[in-house]
Length: 238
Length: 367
Image 1 (cartoon, rainbow over the protein chains, first blue to last red):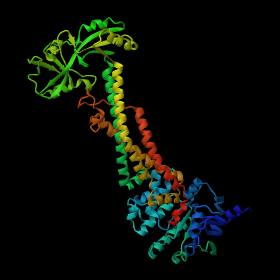
Image 2: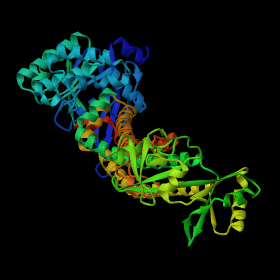
Image 3: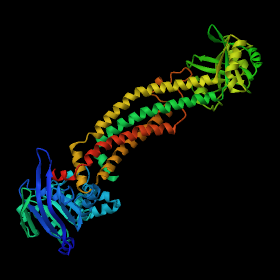
Image 4: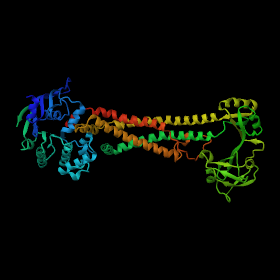
């Protein structure tokens, strides 16, 4: 059996092979953020990357999410190699496969919650009304439907995060990537977020989280904790 | 497009100020263009029906009355088809403190005590006595002439102050003696012979000065072109200043805007999606400014008589302080104006965006 068929058979959605990432290559400030990462992510799995700052969690998530390319190594997504996709196809993969929840939410100020939620869907050429209905439904589901017409800066931290989650889901991605999602949340809101992640899992989504909050990586919803240090995976617990 | 519009609205103060300055520049440039076009067209319309040549007599280097019998001598010159004496002059009416043009048309079918007036005359003349206008004849005698405003002249420019009357009434008012006329109009069979005929007229009648229609048209055209060019050169500075302003405003990407582009790329926008959005932002501003500027200029020139420019652009003795220009829009000039303003502006906003939009989206992960 060839390796890709074997991966499909095992329900893998992402495979990384010997991934490295070097910043400022050839310069005096050259820095190797990832050093030979091998990783397999299974379908419908909740994986949490833990590790101190600078351990390479965010860099790994950005490579997994087609936001940046590795310096060397190969990546497969659903049995298709995506290592060095042209920018256009990388963007297409990003918007059709992944939903991103950023550490600082990264909502665009000055426009409404609804408009922010609709943003990832615009380049797909879907009808405005369809996108709007989908965004409204998501906001309702996340219990911030009443805030849809308000500018995002009027929202509380928890509401902003739910707006960011709605935005991440508007294109119905199969994989959700969240970078330090509980960094600005109190315990109650963090637990609520974990409930949302549990619901994603129920829907069959694969979830990748970078986090060093024990509340998250000790949660029952998490299937796997991957410890990172100095650009390497040091522990991989199922 | 929806996001483009809300994105523009977010920075409404900056974008509105940009739009206003931009529209002002378009307004100034298109006002000058419209105005010069309208005057040129007006002058051409006036001169279209005029004779190929006018012959004046000069005494002491100045225009003087011409003996009517000169017409017969000019008529003998080969190539002329008709020569007619023309009676016209100016009448100063103290009550309205204005000068009016008085003239005897080729065919005037009304009685001697009746005059036909242009649209502006009755409005400015002052009080009429039982529908009659008071004139003071050349010998001081008072004349009351029945006024009929009949002229729906081809152009306001010449008829606004025009009073038409019979020959005998004209001579009474103006004092032009019998046997004399203001000038002679000469119609020529073949336009190309006009120079030769003019030379022959001067040879036969050395105290005359022939004025060719083509010379008048050329003078008008070059005068208006020169004046328009002069104003446009002055406006050139304003246009340049605007582009520096626009470059600064439109291209000076704030850290916030850079982050936004990063976010858009991060959530799945392609470089081309970002550029298309920014293209539309620039296009919306410049097209709005173009339409606003051109429409305001149209109103300014054709409905408000180009109040801002009349001193620079009129200044020609035959033009009167009050007249409404007839719209004369040259689509070719508008197209040039469009391509010289909308296209460069849109481009200068795109180029710096491109630099930011091609950067890797993972910067947003580190924000």
